[in-house]
Length: 103
Image 1: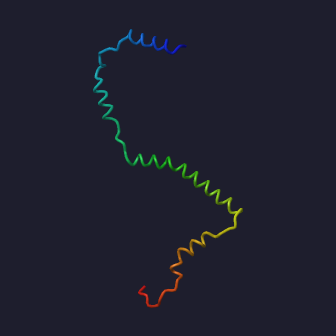
Image 2: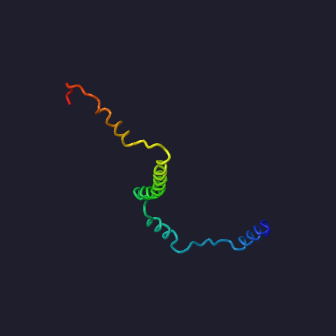
Image 3: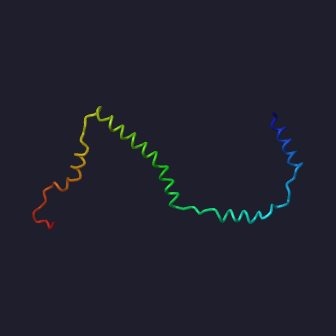
């Protein structure tokens, strides 16, 4: 169908039936009642929705990285990361401290 012809027919049909100037009974009261009954936005609810939406991608990323680290162990020489972390954190404790310290 030709779009210009269809547009002309629709405009002719709209001009043949002009809108009424009459407002439905109690229309402003109904609109104001709907606006008053509308609940206010809760900040905690918005945060909760955002966190629940973020949970699935976080779990997916965790599973991907966990699988990657599990399957990558066989291909590379194993370095004990826990021992490296412990040595780094306790490096200050392992140093010889002077005997005259106040601690």
